Image (tube, rainbow, N blue to C red; front, side, top):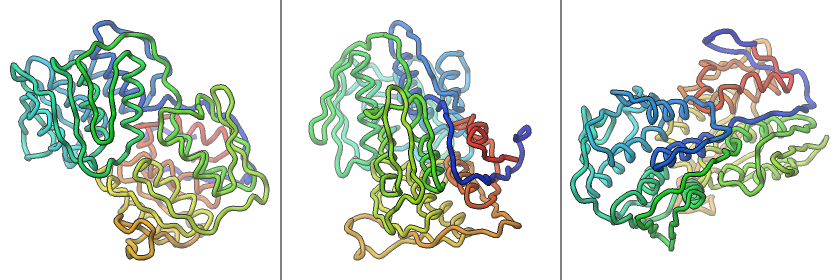
Length: 423
């Protein structure tokens, strides 16, 4: 069991047949949308199975506790949702974040809001947090055009405030839409709370409406589930039950169940749970090509599966990974190299996605068991959790283990449920 805020943990597992039951945390993405919609409602409602992640705790605190300074720390979703929400409110607020957050661009969202009628200025660097949000202008516009390849969090933030604007909002998207499932998630939740959204081709139309308050139950986190799919893929045999998940989910990351069919994993769906099965000597493909444009948060999990099994892979749709908690492409390259696995930019001609930036991964993860590799996590919860699963193959040391609290505080305890040693 890990001690208070250790600098690193050593993860290992001598068992090759993995079984157990895990009750997953509520989805951070769904929880944060539910919190913002509740703040936009006239009447409050109960939210059940709310995520206990840092990001959700920050947003809940900032929306409900009457703070003077809005500090989103390193929570990107929290920062972007609050930018849109506070832009509609009277008064003046400063919205800031961690050092890394102050390196993550917010200009597209700020420009869009200012064009519509908000009054937002930059405190220090143009285009980056912190920002000063003053009372909006007397009249709000009702149409905005945005590049479609921006973060879906910008679009979701605008969508959720749209029905509260005097004339609603029409959002016109130009180019290829990235992270589409997250926009669909937002629309699905708005529908649940009585708001209609029309999505025709590249245009989203939200008339002026009122949200209808009603209690909401947050489904468990499919992004977190992906780490158990890694464990199943790397095991000799697995039977893992994940509670709180649904086959027909609002979350795009439910795609991990289909992706892992390539690695000999079967997913059996029941009421409110999925059972992950890997049979002994299950076969898997030797090479895979996958476009992560719709599910960027699965990239690290799939990369680690391929590294652990020695599967050659070609990845595309990774462009948003450079502006996450860290530059996730660079982080993967650095840490995979320690395991004798390479990830590098690939010539366009060898891929079916000729217009995409492509990355080729080769090699099978290996290590000297007497000298465990040390994995840096770059203040990124997904680096910590994805690489920790390699403890099933050889002992591995994970730096800054408390970073998992951003989305999944109970991760290390849940690994121990599956008989991993976390020291």
